[in-house]
Length: 381
Ligand SMILES: Cc1ncc(COP(=O)(O)O)c(C=O)c1O
Image (cartoon, rainbow, N blue to C red; front, side, top):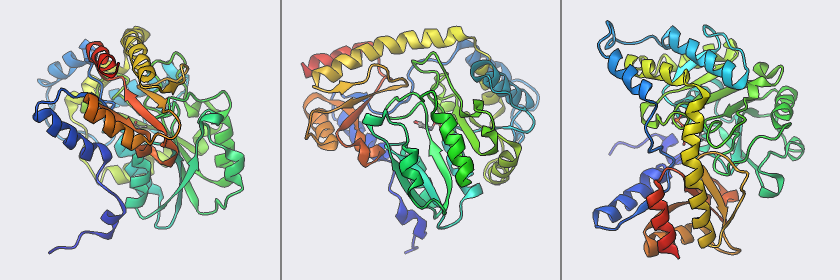
């Protein structure tokens, strides 16, 4: 018997990896399950993206190892994207690193900056990967609680009362998943000041800026932010390319160099055709987002109806790919979603997988077709 590494005992298999096995078993047994769990876009990427990968397959060198920093044209397209949509100027040669999805960036940044015992500020509720990666590298998660009453913004005053001396990284995610909270006017500015004061690297994980939102924002637009902040971004949700695995980390060269040091030891470049497709995606005009969002808007209206049919409440101003809904008092999220799955064959994510502050909430994905959403409403009614 070979004993597993101690680090493996600090984490569990990812919730969806486990739960979707159960859901798939139900489907295999003939149950007509409507899956409103994971946020995996079902819509097609832009046509020009599909053409670009197809055409790229015949290019000379298409099947070779690719450079560790991606094609220069891809880095250029990323800088164009940041300038056009966030008004953030970046150097394509020094301040951009393409990633295979933003999820891998969470590991690479942690490996580049965390030693055993370092503290990491993690939002509760928040994306579970921040916590698991922190544990895998032997650092210590320190949760900062987000509340509906405070519009899911961090309470920096309360945080300052804590001992922050061991804290090296703070994960921030606005627009926020799972709640859909938009960054307030001052939150990024306040976070930059906080990071400078306490010598903390803040990473804003920003994959939802373009979903049901007309005002995409980057933490890097705050003057001086590059000294202490990085930003992760992704094509997964913005261009319906989740399975392609394309994302990016952007920020000052001193950080990018260290992340590249990790990454170049982990993979041997991103497939050429994927990079060609990504370049085309990043060049899409604003028209792409309005077309995409007209679909999500109709779906969200239906999900709101479904939430109401389940006696839940929600915030109409929330954005992103999910509807975060509050359950009636005293109802436990995990028990409730199991009941809905059993009685109505509808799978919804319990808020608790995002942390203890998610108790009493459930999360609906907008990655389901209108017919399925109408069917879900009919079943519940
Ligand atoms: C908050 C957040 N960050 C990062 C990711 C990872 O996205 P990617 O597909 O770019 O790895 C997700 C995916 O669901 C997410 O919700």
